[in-house]
Length: 176
Length: 354
Image (tube, rainbow over all chains, first blue to last red):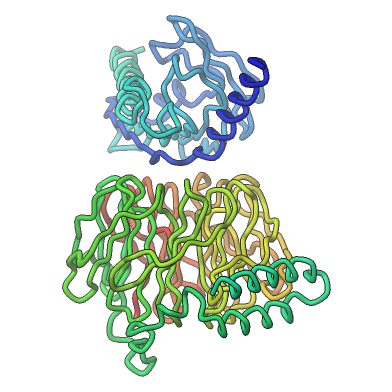
């Protein structure tokens, strides 16, 4: 009896999740930084989808498919936790790449349906790096717990972007 | 009236069984029966129906009403100058938008506050707002009866709403999580894109009842009906394609591959323009040849898309870019853009021309 109830409840929970999948509203974050280095030099650091070692939170990058759309990578974070991503667009000449998270535990990063673009533009010999992401919060039903709210998702992604951009700037302007 | 309802019901069952033999004939008899019974929506055919726009007075005003989900307001864009002439606070994370049959009001859904909001197009003020359903999203207006049709994401119904009072007069059961909704130009059929059922529902507007469902691609979101009222086009977010449904025969007759995560479709007599959210493009399908003839780069995350300026232009709201961009429907080039509020969605028929 209990088992039947448990199965019924699990089924109900699963169908609720599917039905409510797009109830919350999509969020976005854009962070930019100016770096006193030419575009090619910046792109050489951040343009390789298979090496995200430039970000201070990343322990290692493992993947396949190089820098072609469809390429995959798994990021292992320094505090533990993994993020699985796929490259969706690659514009080497335009110094831009877009990717999506295919799998992540919301305890690692409290977002769902995350997509992102990283782009470098010339600013009179210097570089402007823009990192933008579109995503839903980690909790897809109504009334999320605070750690899985819209605000928590925006805060987490903003932190990831700022941390990464600051690190590239420091590295390149130190003459790295 | 009880007996009448029962009779109506029997008729729908019949329609289901006869689907293979001649749906249209069955539909027509059902419509006739519903008309005799005096069904839900026809009672709404009041002043708004009488006050329908006269085509003679066209060309003086061309505007886009863009719902901005992030900044929770409505940008009014003059399409002649491509400038924002008003910004109207809405609240509740507005998404869906539709224009009243008499062009005097714009209706906006606010999914977060669960409201339907009516904005006066002359004064640019909110003239009414009313709580509705559990998750109002897609919205359309019946151009003949004037009724406002609101798709409810959580309640899995289409609400039939009075355009003046915003009171709900009826609800029509459809599939799971209806998102886009559209009405044929003759006002007879309502079509909803039932996102989580991978289908469209075809509804007899006068009877207020669903008469058929048609399987389409995966996760249909926006739905648009052609000017003749013959075909419905769904943008299928999950399968990255567009399904074409023949309304009379209730069958899917074509599928076109487009860019990633398509959101909605705009139609001219020769082309379908599809906003590809993740690709950042608008796919252009040649309707006669049935092939994609161009992929136009637009701002990041293009969403709401509609034909404007008497069919000469297509307007698309770019959610990430915070722009409304204009595409020349003949040359297929981007010819203008304007910055709007944060997170424009413009989900629906968001253009007013009169």
